[in-house]
Amino acid sequence: MSARAESTTNELTKDKIARRARASYRPFVRVGFALVIAFLVTRFQFDYLESLLYDARMRLRPAPAPSGHVTTITVDARTIDRLRRAPDAKDHAKLLGALAARGPKAVMYLIHPSEIVGSYEDLKAFAEAAERTPGFVVAVDDVPMKGAEESFRLAVPFEKLKVAAAPSTSDRNLFARDLVTRRMFTSYQGQTFLHVELAALFNPKVRDENRIHGVFDFLDARQVYIDFRPAGRYPATSFAEAADGDFEGGVGGKIVIVGRDLRTTVKDYIRTPYSREVDAMTAVEMHANMLDTLILNDGYYRLPDGLNVLFTTLMSVLTVYVVLALKPAQGLLLLGSAVLSFSALCYLAFWWGTVWVVMAHPVLAAFICYYFFIPYRLIVENRKSWEYYQKNRLLTQVEELKTNFLSMMSHDLKTPIARIQGMTDIVLKDPAPLSERQREALHTLEKSSQELLEFVSSILNLGRIESKELRLHLHSKDPNQLIKEVAGKLEYMAKPKGIDLKLELEPMFSIKMDVDLMRQVIANLIENAIKYSPAGTRVLVSAEEAAGRVSIQVADQGAGVPEDEIGHIFSKFYRSKGAKSSDIKGSGLGLYLAKYFVELHKGSISVDSSPGQGSTFTVELPTDLQEQ
Picture 1 (cartoon, rainbow, N blue to C red):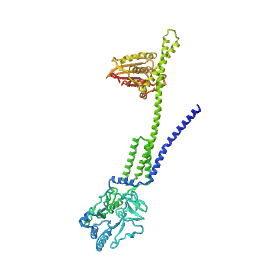
Picture 2: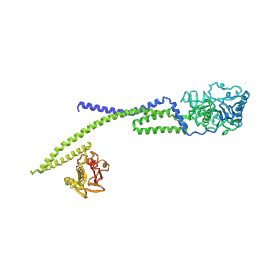
Picture 3: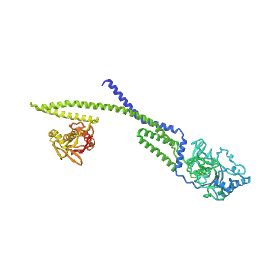
Picture 4: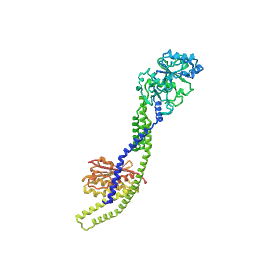
């Protein structure tokens, strides 16, 4: 090997090793990218998007039933219409008297006493009625600093009334920042708020905040997500009716919340996960939902950040695999199924287990990975397409050169072969005596030149097929006559082996065919039958016409074709294992050309073979083939 050739070989080997090394590292690089994207995505808070997904789950789940321990009384339009004014201190005292007579568990007043109008005596009477009402407490929507609880004390004549912090909260400057109320305080700086105290009347274990389902720490406060019900789920009694002792659903043994529903100020209403309207729900119902969340202890538990990172990582890796390893349709189907399955899992966990699985990060990771790696895949595929185009272009040129070379060589080889055959025939027919060895050599030469001529003809036909130049030249011909002509010329092959070449031909009319092509088909089948048949056996050639088709069969008593090879014997250049292991020569083109020629006649060719019992090849041709 020359130094230049050796250098080229070494370069090719190095290039192949480098490509294999890149291919082996590529999966790790892709996973690395997926991990980086997952890490970066989880570093950011997508509270607004996550809150939208939280609200969607809240709206889609079946709304839980109230505990039945909370009822509400509201100063509403019916109250104003009935009293012809807003309730004053006398009306409030009358309401509390009606409540006290029915033994509520507690009365949570959302209307601050300082907002109630009336004379001093009337206000004092209201304060005394409040003192006599079981569990009466004024709820203040404020959070006192630790040690400043006395700032909540009311002025005379309400100084003896119990005042407690019952703050509401909405996502204003933190979390989703959409003004929707989703959370509630349970304590601040160690101070337990009113909702926990009242809920403990029915569920004592919530006194221990660590046993409140879903409680979490935020700054100096402990909070829990409210298990909201849609507006209108709590029994509501109009203030005027309640003052007369007519209560919706009863108040005995329940927590009664008294507030307003006049639609005159936004502070009496909140936005909820069900609706972002300013008056989506009254503050009265909000506090009822807060109390039931603690009484039923079904606040939503948010999974730890570690699991969120895990889900996000798995979604990123899956997306990268889908984009780079699967077909687009399969990838979209798998990725869509994964996202839908993950969403269904999150929904079921939210509904059945009151567990909040963060969805924003995994979904965004899938979206980002998909749209990040799609351009990369397009670049890779475009590069491959360009390489395939260049290779195909080169292969097309090589194929054209090969075809032209074979055609040229085949044509050029035919002339000297014909000369060899002619000279051989002259010598054999010359009256001059030849020795036995000379005559045997000439017969061998004649046989070899015939085999070479057949091989060259096959190559020529193959070239014509691949160049799409082969056309039928139809003429009327009696199939029986054609079979007899071919069989007569092949008797020389059968005699040396003692093979009985028998013809069983039923009379039939001439049909349209390309005589030269069909002559090659029949000759090939009979030659193969003779070649692969043992000495002293029989080859049967039969022909018949039925149902508008001519059927030609060539049956031998040879070794047969193995079942696993039957599907390949009509393939180009295919030779069975038995033929390769024997001394029988062949190009592997005969049956391929025969099948092509028959199908060009709108016919069919098939084989029925059993190992050790011979083979039967059947050719069927139409009797009404027309010019194409």
